[in-house]
Length: 96
Length: 435
Image (tube, rainbow over all chains, first blue to last red; front, side, top):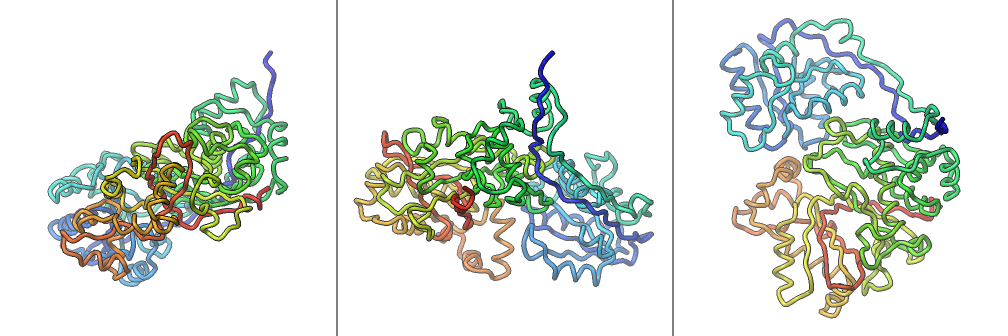
């Protein structure tokens, strides 16, 4: 019978994960302000513009506003505060 | 996810190849039910019409209409699972259940704990022997690592670094160098789509004490210390940060062979210039490691020959301009440059800076410059703002002078040099503090 070995687990120590709740959803986006967050990836501006056009054509009762963070991959508290103050919902995207 | 917590319903849109990564990130953030929608890859270089087709098409992950995913994600009532989120403790045991060598080797491979080359199994005896290479306590936290800025930090202790050093085949006397590399806080296994690696440079007396090679083949697999220190740095990065798994925590499109092992010493005694660590304020008798994030592009040349200026200009222009160059140069070529009047590294760096130029239209037509630098330029941050104002054919410099670095190494069988992508970011760590 082959010898049994005891070896170390090579992995580091992960953080505890604390659950966070999702925001309550509105029944409809009609009359609501929907922020389209352009995350500044190459060509995401064009994607977000097409998304804005889609809403204008198909769901004109939704008030879309395009917004950009100051930098890509870096949290922009000022932008977040603006969305939290004025927005009812947000779509964020899109990369690569 | 911050918006959700602030009460703003949100949907994040990704391209489909990022589905596993996005889901793993949401789970680790305690929001596994975050609404995500997917479009096909790529977004880059697609016309407005092509992107409109994505929007009017189907989500390639859920197979449902993309816009339906978006609108339902923002308006569909939440269920109990959505409201409670997910709280859980993950733990990694100190020791694994006893098993045969064959089964344990298989387990390490199946769990993506290796670089898919054979490893030395980290038995208690081997790890205890490795820990004799440092005076630091086994439970001391060396660094917090993560594969990307949007992922959670994991902690890695001295003992865990020693475990990975055993796996790499390193000797106990190498451990202070490996600990210092990890203590830089720079993972050697970034998840970036750009397939980055990290080049580590060792300076000071430790190089000779542990028998590192700065001669023939310094950057290749021709020395036990060079090879296993670099490998241990990568293995400890993989496991210390909780993985480097394609599609989940590694997204490098092409991959990078420098991710196996890429640590080498500077040939200080044969260089005409100050060693790198002395340039950065350390004493010659100090031992240090410096980490250069990049390894994406490699250009090379010989010389300086008669047309050395043209050769360098071509190589610099071909460099990825969001990743400044690290020039690694053989002592023969270094001494020739010295004789030509470049009597300090700084003088040659100044020349490289002044001659690393591109027309503005080429400079800005770069994926990462567009994504990461252009927003800063538009916000008025210099020097980017001025470059953005340049005429399309006007030459602009590619790099900041302080971001270009030079290290001397090699066996003097040829007057060669290589130009690597290598962002230093001020990361130099004392090895002596980890002895």
